[in-house]
Image 1 (cartoon, rainbow, N blue to C red):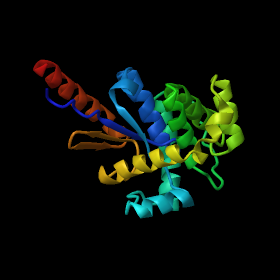
Image 2: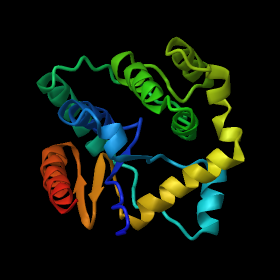
Image 3: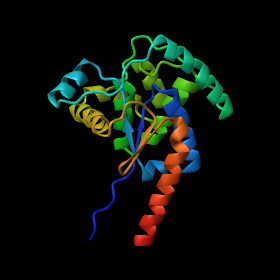
Image 4: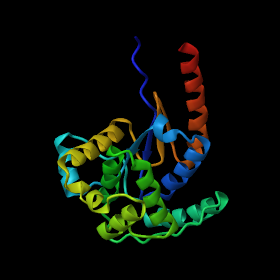
Length: 214
């Protein structure tokens, strides 16, 4: 029996407005995406995460943006959100701790509620402008979604989840991920919101070939 093909990977970040918009398009065009693709969180490490990454000799290809690029993104995302019919509120990030929401998502995925928390966090951040790096906010968002907020905000304290988060960043390193949204289909890579339809077309071709062989 031939080995089962690896799922395509979708690297996302709750920090990125482009990732949020791409997720909207992705699940509109491919409703079964959460089952068909491997969702992989990509986030800025905290001190503990950096130490673990250094032990594995893993780096981050992402670099912080300049002020000029940030101002451009503010304009660009406003245009794009209007194009996609999304009501966007840009949040203000003060000393953000991106480990929290992404590890909370990893914890929710364990119980089969990852997508519920995924969209609850996206809506809180991009539709209401809330600070999803604040444990109280994450707790309230999770509780409102019918999840155990107290459990999810403790996710960064779980050694197994910490290790899983490191695994995600290690995958990103070896997949040459330098920003999100980022899709990996076999040897092919697609970066950015404007490449999502190229990825979807390539995915459909790949799925058709797989069906013909089976």
